[in-house]
Image 1: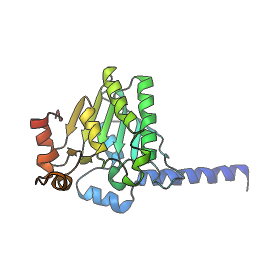
Image 2: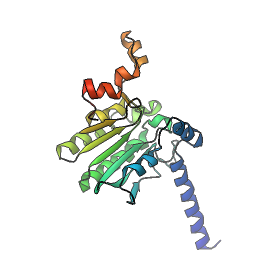
Image 3: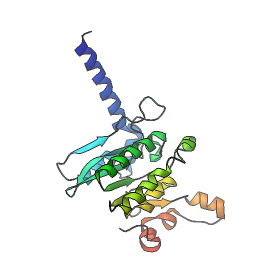
Image 4: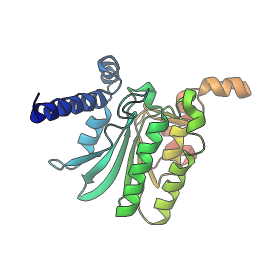
Length: 227
């Protein structure tokens, strides 16, 4: 095998791993997500950025060689929105409901660092079940840095914006809760630390998703949602 052939094989391997990242949780979960009338994370980003503009994806192979799905269940990168370069973070709900694992945290930290160093506003496309429970001991303490970074960004007058598309529970609720501006999709977005089953178990109270954390409630009662 020539050196060129060997390098082409390596490039093919790289393309294959990148394809795994783009596939997220796989065709079955992508189809189910589409059947619910929702877009995949890269499709959401494509709709968000200015037409014809480039999106510079960051750390697409995060988690490679680990037990976790390549891509770390989140898409991060720099895109242009209304002529402004922004750091965009999008949970991939097809991978364990968008739950964050240790590689997710590292990937988002890197995106946050780049945003801070370059003065970029941050836009989060949120649909996450919070922390991956089997590995939460590796996330719980270092993960707090993410929320600290949100407050520091706000204090530095770098806007933080959250767009919520579905269930965002536990750690997934902190990002919209702490962002400067939060937009929630009516009848789809839900933001709460714990859902109705947890409330029932803890307090004995009956509740439902909408009254507990729906877009209407957060826009009209709690004030968390701006739109």
